[in-house]
Length: 115
Length: 115
Image (cartoon, rainbow over all chains, first blue to last red; front, side, top):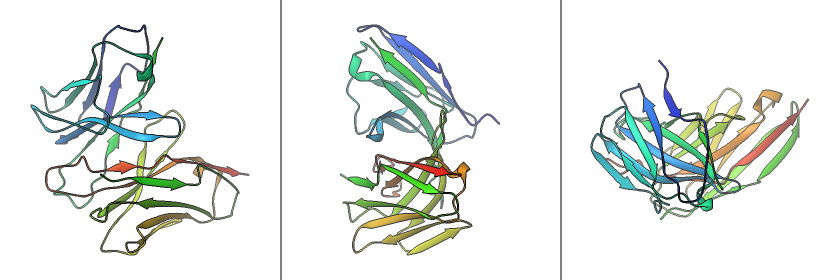
């Protein structure tokens, strides 16, 4: 049981390049999330998904796109990377809100630098 | 939307002392308040959570208190140990039926426990 895994762990991009971050979970969770973590700003939600085939915008969605074609995978895309997108990206997953505990399980993070 | 403020941003205590981290929130509709611990190089992990129908909750050396009237909640760690050193995040949100996007995180507190 690997939990939540993220690929890659590190990446350096040049301004204007594109890339996709992959998140996978093996806990059969319905909900999945992408956050970015910047110094002094905590975790900010980029996009989230409440089920296969559905996605929705979070707090800071501009410049990112997502897809949830399979229940276990949630992809985060940067079409044209900008230096402001330099950050640590975390994926998380959780059961539906019907459960008593709404715990989110986080992946180990991807450190992205845009030059 | 919800806004969460967390204080202090850094906290240094001597091993065996207590540590207290405080958070305030703005949305009176929030009813779920989790606390996450993030160790260096890892993703955040839930350590304790509290629902709005409870004023206090304990789990061994950690406890959380909630004051709904004042819209603030606190994390208390007693008998601190060096392994408690980490960044702690509070969060507040509405545990709704479908929309899990209402969760907001605080900026984090870096706790250092000196041996």
